[in-house]
Length: 456
Figure (tube, helix red, strand yellow):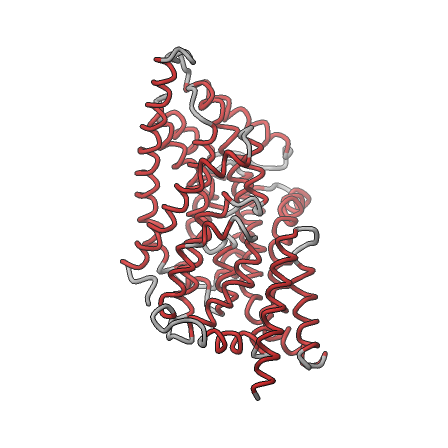
């Protein structure tokens, strides 16, 4: 029995270690290590192909609902953003800054929050950074402050059910995605106040930096900023992007109000648990496609445009079902957790999920999102579970820590996109944003503990 346990422990650690290494290496698509490595591990541990098939079926049950939801959520929000629903709001926020440094910092955070409603970092950065960078340059504000405020706001709001991280966490701990998200609503509300406080702080700090440079004669004071011109440039860019989509897309106030009504209805019925999230987004997409597109061909074009992003995310989830199924059903995770009890002090065990949560932002610099959720989270969950920690508490702690630091990690493709759009350097972005994001993640975990979301 001890030999069997040792084999499972060593094989499980090997599967996790090799999978993480390959994911960090980045030379293969995440599907490769998530599918191949656990199968080889199961065979080495003495399981048959027939059993591996059963493990896959078990793992698939964990991820299937989340995967379906993500497919249709990504396409649904893609169509909503194509419609330009949020453009007037973003334009209004740009105008509201009045070209004042502190207000620009606050406006940047609000714009990023609004832009991240679809849960996709790439679209958020494409929408916000090109629109705001000219304003930052005109005011002599640092592009690294722009990056910090955008990634901080976007990453924190990546806790939404269709954002990706929550779906990964829910599939790993085998929890309902809405069940896992509902306690986080209070944390997200609190995060808005923390983000606004951070924006004001960094805005005043930037204002003083600019004043010092002006006093030193290194730059000239800028008083002739036309904020309306910046807003007009944003609107013109969005109109040009809209025109490229063709004349088959409807554009009038009735369609705009219809899109808003559908969006609010989908979110409400999903959060109220009237229908499952997957069904809510399927029905939502079925309504917004004919609402925005005059022809079947135009509707198909919108689906084709957003399908790659949807399939990229969900293909990883389906591959992860093999990884999760093998680790859970073979007993590897349980064996690793049992072995960990021998080395982890009793005083540390009940707080393991908090300790890891506090250290997640530094860990984000060392591992990819998929490696984090599909390798580290199940390991910490299984180990902390031996000390009576609920899986949801572990998931919440590690999720809050991870999303806050996602876009300071060089392993996140979105980070490179954001840095490129801002004309910045990755190393300087990490140095500028790392500690503010780490502090924010710790504050949010403490808020979650205070609200009873994270227990120990």
